[in-house]
Amino acid sequence: MRQTLVAGNWKLNGSKESIQELLKGILAGMSEAKTAVAVCAPYIYIPMVQEILSGTEVGFGSESISEHDSGAFTGEISGSMLNDFSCQYAIVGHSERRTIFGEKDADTANKFAAARKYGLTPILCLGELLEEREAGTTEEVVARQLDAVIGLEGVGALADAVIAYEPVWAIGTGLTASPQQAQDVHAFIREKIAKLDAGVAEKVQILYGGSVNGGNADELFSMPDIDGGLIGGASLKAEDFLAICRAG
Ligand code: 13P
Image (cartoon, rainbow, N blue to C red; front, side, top):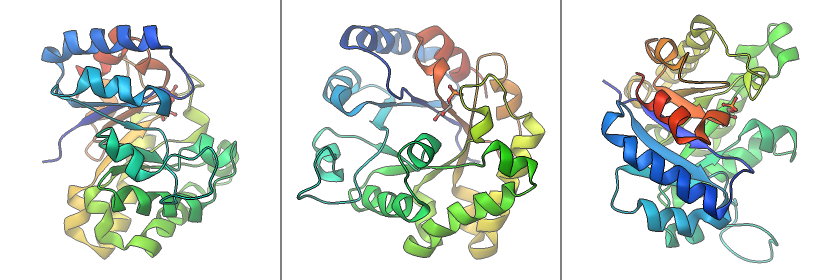
């Protein structure tokens, strides 16, 4: 039985004050959480997040990671730097990194490898654009994104990773994939992995992301291949986030 995980992705949001408030609120409500809980923070706030969360049951991590170890890469943050602040997770391949910042499948695979190299659990985001769904190529796109990682790191690497299926058209739009639409893609991902390694397929957590909220989380998380959620907007207010953590 896989444990359900709810992870927040704060994106480019928050301030020192608002994050302290948010984490205080989350910690206060954790006794009611039915899922494992984590937050992924903007780099600059990670030391503060570590200070507040260390010794608690709420995990934390970064929203991205450099594929490089060190050197002349202005503006980048490496896995060893994230290790210095005890990060447990690093999101890789978020659709905003792919579409706005031009990260390719190969870049995502390299970031996934960098996270693993430093003992971080990568949260690997996969998902199709609206036009790709409308063209009937959802599975092809998700398979291509996943194959880039499997090709570089091998299927076994997914055993210590988290996958997040996030249809791009559902992110921040209020348009959630229906539980069945999400389940279909999650099952496709798991079956694809199972063809290579049934044990890894059974173990890997596959989260759904895209307009998850307290009202739809229960139904989404009750689907057999949906093991929790990666939450954007609703992770910014403790009450909204906790409502999702109480589902599942
Ligand atoms: P929303 O929950 O705001 O749709 O964002 C989802 C997401 O991108 C999480 O990574």
